[in-house]
Length: 393
Image (cartoon, rainbow, N blue to C red; front, side, top):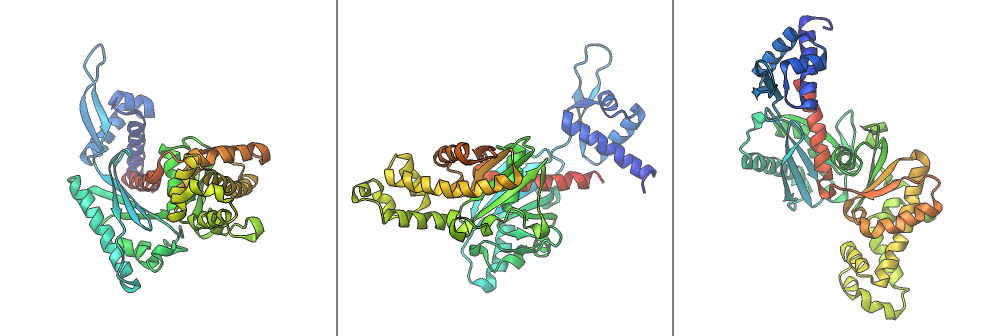
């Protein structure tokens, strides 16, 4: 109850923990000055936090005169959190302490399932086995793990934890990856979030969008999607559908995902190559034999004419989508990521030129700094936020 002794003690301890997280090592007197709490109140609260192992006494301060004050530090090793990025072909996992410092990051294969009937059970077993391996490698037990954040490549309903519109390679696994199923497998708090939303949060926390008031993270790869953050908060919308760009209509009423995904890029390449003069052929012979987005970008970096022209046309389509986003949101920044969007050295010069000539709203354009770690980084952040909130109550 508000105003009760227990409520006031929790409030005081929260203030002290926030101070130590923000400022680092502090003496009891420093904490008193910073929080405006009385010295007896600080001493009592600190003793209780020490009993809970949430803060530690770390030694003496270097004050020039008088008795050396004992320093207090937030115990970032009291507990740990994990962030998990569930992809179509890989599972990425990050282990972090209570300050959010990533202590270990590992990539595991998404093993082929043995049929849709067993796919759900198999992915749950796989996730638990990989997490057990991560903890064992770092000499941790499940008692030390407070929360795991999972990045899901589909729509996550923020109210129910249900999943829909999952990427096609994981179709049939929706029920297994929902909150109720995961909570039965993992002995800690579970948080689910759309993977692109988490990538946006990762970039805001530690990547290309630090301190950006309004920005869009646009992921382009096997699928397409966007995470939108306003004043440090993710926009989720009705049923978690904010940022589901796949259905946006572009040239000729075609779906954005059909045009900008990896399959869309390969279709564009085939259509354009059919009309190229024969003298261009030698430049992209390897790409013609084994067409992949990676080889196309490699050819463009080598200056091969066909590849450059294909990606220039692709950039015009991408710029059309970005223009629609800018008209509606007027973001300060757009960050591109994903297997295709991450090729900023090739795409950004085209996009910046188009922006300067055609956009009425001209945000900064850049690429992800975190790359394939963006989702796991964001997953660590949501797990950390939940854990700190829990520890403060």
